[in-house]
Amino acid sequence: MPDSAQYELEIQKLKGGLRQYRVKEPKWVGEIPSGQYVYRVRGHDWTGNPGEWTESQHVVVPAPAPSLESPSGEEYE
Figure 1: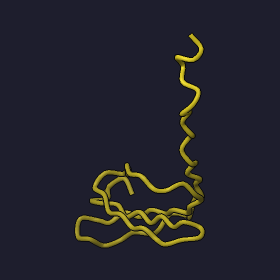
Figure 2: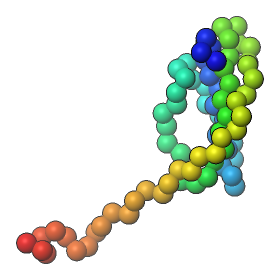
Figure 3: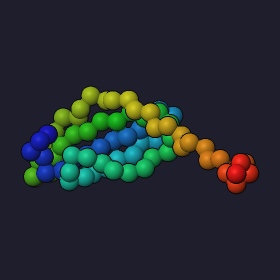
């Protein structure tokens, strides 16, 4: 895949839908909801022909940390 013109990424939530992305760099930056996912990647050559998919990998996106609303820090000064 190092000589690929673009990359295709499939991300599937274990209990949900499939998301597909195409990027020109071998990285993806984005946000997806918390949960358990399976993903795989393949490269496309300069004429658009796809290569083989990588083995599926599992990833867990954690839920955001809760924020403290009360008590405020002023109550301890």
